[in-house]
Image 1 (tube, rainbow, N blue to C red):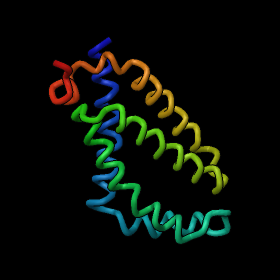
Image 2 (image 1 turned 135 degrees about the vertical axis):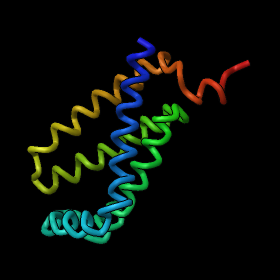
Image 3 (image 1 turned 30 degrees about the vertical axis):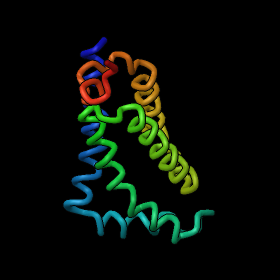
Image 4 (image 1 turned 90 degrees about the vertical axis):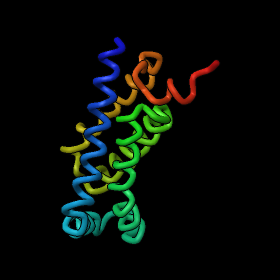
Amino acid sequence: MQIGYLLMRLMLGVNLFLHGFIRTLTEYGLWMEATLPTFEGTILPMFLVEGFLYLIPPAEIVLGAFLLLGLFTRTALIGSALLFLALEIGHGVRHNFGDMHVLMHFSVYLWALLVFRKSNWLALDNKLFASS
């Protein structure tokens, strides 16, 4: 159970971290230019969409790094769930229903990681916040 938890936490951490890091490193502007127009004509104000799009990669980097380290694990999992919820809403308002199932899969991973947090044995949380 502990090894399975560790691997699942690391997989999600790598996914988030690399998503944000590579996007920031290589294609931030191109991604913004391609994504922003897909929200035109939706119920969301464009200034909010643009602001949120700027925040996604840094949020992915921070949340992914915390999950990789096992630091503030509970908070990182809840933050990830909220990020994925916002992304789910974004897909919905754009009528991009074909990709919404991918985010639903992430919700199952996040649920499992939250529920089985007691199996989070190899984590900085245990070293830094262990009760005496």
